[in-house]
Length: 103
Image 1: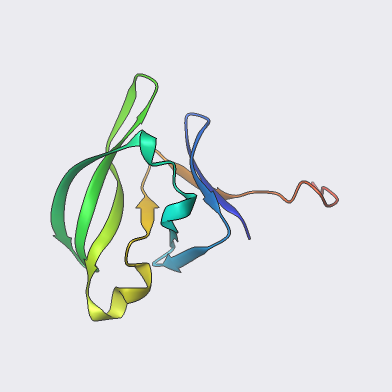
Image 2: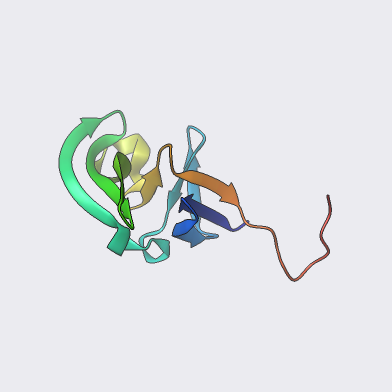
């Protein structure tokens, strides 16, 4: 299933290669639009050491809402190098536009 991360209608990431841990989708790096992300810090987290990012869309800044597990703990190796998002970024499935639509 293709997932999309958006902030104010701007696509930050989209792809069908996500890893879900704790209900959070971690996007493969090639599916992320990095021009909207600005690094702010490295900090420890439950899954390992995280690179944290602010997200910029036009003149809007969403502080500290994206992260990438740079140095994962052994139980989180599958999310290493992947990017996840928190609110106000909305992560949702993308409807297959080639198939029939249901309501």
